[in-house]
Length: 81
Image (cartoon, rainbow, N blue to C red; front, side):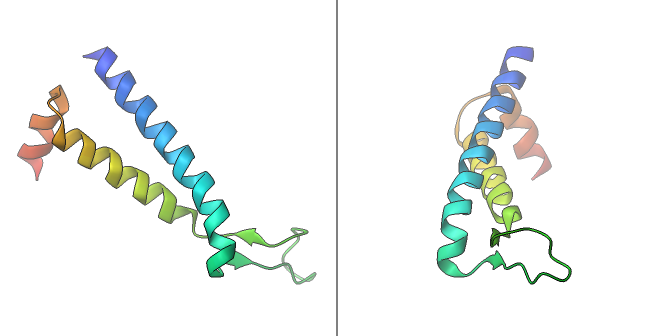
Protein backbone atom coordinates (compact mmCIF):
# COMPACT_ATOMS: atom_id res chain seq x y z
CA UNK A 1 0.00 0.00 0.00
CA UNK A 2 2.86 2.38 0.76
CA UNK A 3 4.38 1.81 -2.68
CA UNK A 4 1.08 2.68 -4.40
CA UNK A 5 0.72 5.81 -2.27
CA UNK A 6 4.22 6.98 -3.16
CA UNK A 7 3.60 6.25 -6.83
CA UNK A 8 0.33 8.22 -6.85
CA UNK A 9 2.09 11.13 -5.11
CA UNK A 10 4.92 11.12 -7.67
CA UNK A 11 2.48 11.01 -10.59
CA UNK A 12 0.43 13.85 -9.08
CA UNK A 13 3.52 15.99 -8.39
CA UNK A 14 4.98 15.47 -11.85
CA UNK A 15 1.62 16.12 -13.54
CA UNK A 16 1.25 19.33 -11.53
CA UNK A 17 4.77 20.46 -12.47
CA UNK A 18 4.11 19.70 -16.15
CA UNK A 19 0.76 21.52 -16.20
CA UNK A 20 2.29 24.51 -14.39
CA UNK A 21 5.14 24.75 -16.91
CA UNK A 22 2.64 24.54 -19.77
CA UNK A 23 0.43 27.19 -18.19
CA UNK A 24 3.42 29.55 -17.81
CA UNK A 25 3.86 29.36 -21.58
CA UNK A 26 0.16 29.59 -22.47
CA UNK A 27 -0.87 32.34 -20.02
CA UNK A 28 0.94 35.25 -21.76
CA UNK A 29 -0.52 34.26 -25.12
CA UNK A 30 -4.09 34.57 -23.82
CA UNK A 31 -3.46 37.63 -21.65
CA UNK A 32 -3.27 36.06 -18.19
CA UNK A 33 -0.35 38.17 -16.96
CA UNK A 34 0.22 40.68 -14.22
CA UNK A 35 2.16 43.63 -15.57
CA UNK A 36 4.47 45.66 -13.30
CA UNK A 37 3.38 49.24 -12.73
CA UNK A 38 6.30 50.52 -10.65
CA UNK A 39 4.04 51.45 -7.78
CA UNK A 40 2.70 48.37 -6.01
CA UNK A 41 3.97 45.58 -8.20
CA UNK A 42 7.67 45.09 -7.68
CA UNK A 43 8.35 42.36 -10.23
CA UNK A 44 10.40 43.48 -13.22
CA UNK A 45 8.57 41.78 -16.07
CA UNK A 46 5.05 40.52 -16.80
CA UNK A 47 4.29 37.48 -14.65
CA UNK A 48 1.82 34.72 -15.60
CA UNK A 49 -1.12 34.41 -13.21
CA UNK A 50 -3.80 31.78 -12.79
CA UNK A 51 -1.55 28.95 -11.63
CA UNK A 52 -4.54 27.46 -9.87
CA UNK A 53 -5.85 26.45 -13.28
CA UNK A 54 -2.80 24.22 -13.74
CA UNK A 55 -3.06 22.72 -10.24
CA UNK A 56 -6.79 22.05 -10.69
CA UNK A 57 -6.15 20.44 -14.08
CA UNK A 58 -3.50 18.18 -12.56
CA UNK A 59 -5.87 17.21 -9.75
CA UNK A 60 -8.59 16.29 -12.22
CA UNK A 61 -6.18 14.33 -14.41
CA UNK A 62 -4.89 12.28 -11.48
CA UNK A 63 -8.37 11.60 -10.08
CA UNK A 64 -9.70 10.51 -13.47
CA UNK A 65 -6.66 8.27 -13.88
CA UNK A 66 -7.19 6.74 -10.43
CA UNK A 67 -10.85 6.06 -11.12
CA UNK A 68 -10.14 4.50 -14.52
CA UNK A 69 -7.34 2.12 -13.47
CA UNK A 70 -7.63 -0.80 -11.06
CA UNK A 71 -5.87 0.21 -7.82
CA UNK A 72 -6.42 0.18 -4.05
CA UNK A 73 -7.63 3.80 -4.05
CA UNK A 74 -10.39 3.20 -6.57
CA UNK A 75 -12.82 1.64 -4.12
CA UNK A 76 -12.44 4.55 -1.70
CA UNK A 77 -12.98 7.07 -4.50
CA UNK A 78 -16.08 5.34 -5.84
CA UNK A 79 -17.57 4.91 -2.36
CA UNK A 80 -17.18 8.61 -1.53
CA UNK A 81 -18.57 9.83 -4.88
